[in-house]
Image (tube, rainbow, N blue to C red; front, side, top):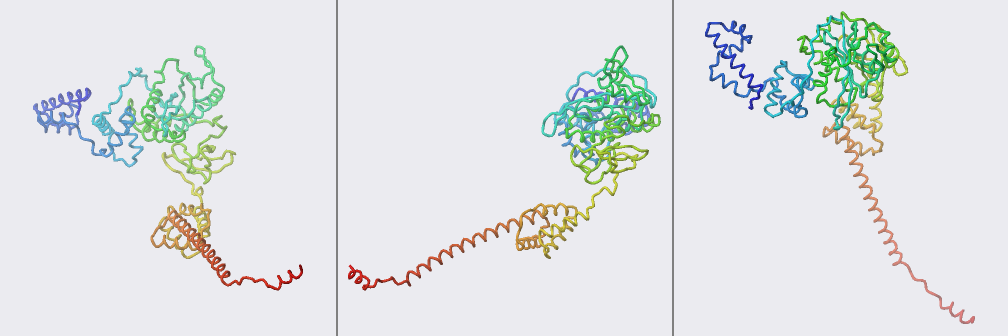
Length: 535
């Protein structure tokens, strides 16, 4: 293993600590006393005392073994680092949790060690970073006092290798560091910014007394020595709210350093190396990341989980007022997923079957006390749900599921009509439903898509062949039917040709027979004599 500069410094510290531990032991101190004096774990003290000097130097000079809990994920980590060498250990930890939900319990330090060893073993160094800006630490604000807003943008790679620019809105509660992000595939306007902020305040379940903004054109149309002229849409929105709007001075990023750190965190942890699969998909992934990592992992400064701190801070937040103008007055648009659900505050809620028609399908939401009322684009009520206080749950209304039994019965009747109401058909469908219960509908659909007409004998023979050989699959059945139908057609064509040849042969034979049996006509000599006499 190549020893890096950082690794060498770490070894020097370990060597000094080993000598210090043995010196204290020689003075008669116990393991517990040594652990208190050196701030080492008692197990580390015991391990140092069990090794003599040669054993210790040999131990720190040998490459460390891969963490056993995560050893089988080395290939995944290597691939991620190869694709994007900038990824941090924290990002790798988040990707592991995202891709492998059944991971064993482990400490973040375990992932750090794994990433470090993979980098060394496969020579994937982390690119050097530019010197970061220095921020002055400001005093902590009180719970519910302030939140900060900012924007970010970056390029993402699509699945076909192209580049897609994305823009995101970020908002953070200054005290708890509880954050929210929302993505758009085009630059934010005053309207989409208001929409994003309302989503954030709903996610926070309230608003702070003041919200700090940058001097962005989506908020301000003109500025004159601290006198701000707001855009018409943002001014109308802000007038109807209880929070106070504050703008930071230009070229003064320190005043909103908390949200700037969030923007950087989103870029370096959530976005780096992630593929772009559509804006709705990205927003769903962002909410899952917030629950899994962004608000779950302890903050580097406070050393507390934002999620735990938010449980305290939300009691100090101002209650939300009814919306004035966010995409639709009194309503809020939500995208409908292919499975007829929508996401609200990190939970999925069901919609009636058939609500989704294409990737632009939207529903309108209205919050009434502890209920979500859902409307279609014509503002007709289509569903209601009680708001779940959990996160990451699926709230389903059983009346929204399609009536599978009646639909399958109808499909089955059409399948019987196609195959013919024979004992072979009924037996095949019965066995198919038992063997492929989860895919019975899909198998029936294969039959219903067929438009050609097949002979009854061919279908029966094919059904028997599938039943006898336990080939309970309609794709296989149709392949056999089509093959036998082609064979039958060829056989009929051959028989027709043979019949044609036989017919031609028979005609020739009849002609020859007629020739053989025919008697040539002879002229009567008397006719000639009469002609001659006439002359």
